[in-house]
Length: 240
Image (cartoon, rainbow, N blue to C red; front, side):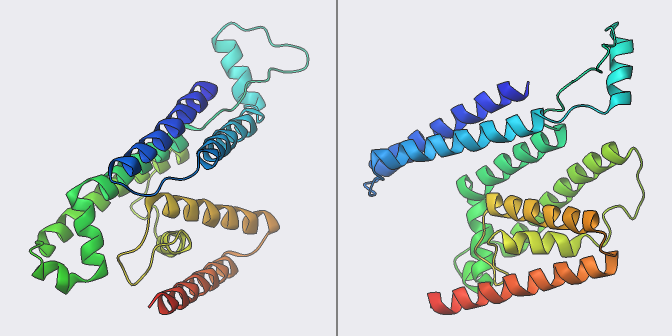
C-alpha cells in the first residue's frame, strides 16, 4: 500500500505540474523551460520514492509481528518475520489535511480573505470583507484541526487527558515561522508550515536522543523562534 501511495503521489505531482503550466499559458504568464518541468517532476518523484523506500526499510516490532503471525496462521520463520512498517496512517492523514487546507487557502475566497485580514485588517474591512465573521470561521476551522490532532494523538498514546497538547503552542508557532509564515501576517503557505513542523519535530527528537533536559529543549526552541522572527524582520525590511 505504501508503494501504491507513492505511485498516486507521483501521478499527482505530474498533474500539478501540467496544470500549473496550463494555467500559466492560459493567462499569458511566462512559462518555465521544458527541461525545468521535467526536472521538477523527476525531483518530486525521486523524493517520494526515496521516502517510501526508507519507511519500508523499518520492520514491525518483533512482538507485534509475532502477534500478527499468530492471528493470521503464519508460520514464524527461524530468522523472524520481516514486515515493512510502511507509511504511518497519521502521516497520510496529515498529508490529506495539508492538501485540503492548501486548497482552502489558495482556491477559495475564504482563503483570500484570511490573507487579506492578516496583511492589513483595516484595509480588508474597508474593502468590504466581514472581518469578524471571517475571524469566527478561522477559530472554527482551528477547532476542527485541533480535534483531528487530538484524535491522532489519543489513538497513538491509547490515552487522553484534558491537558493533552498543553504547552505545545511554542512548537507550533516556531514550526509556522520556520516554514515561512510571517508574524506580521499576510504571508505563509500550508506546505511551508508542514515542513517547519517536520524540522521542529526532528529537532525535538534529536534533543531527546542526545539526552537534553526538557527545560533546555524549550530554551533551544525559543532561540530558534527568535532567530526565525529576526530573519523574517530583516527580509520584510529589505522587501520594502
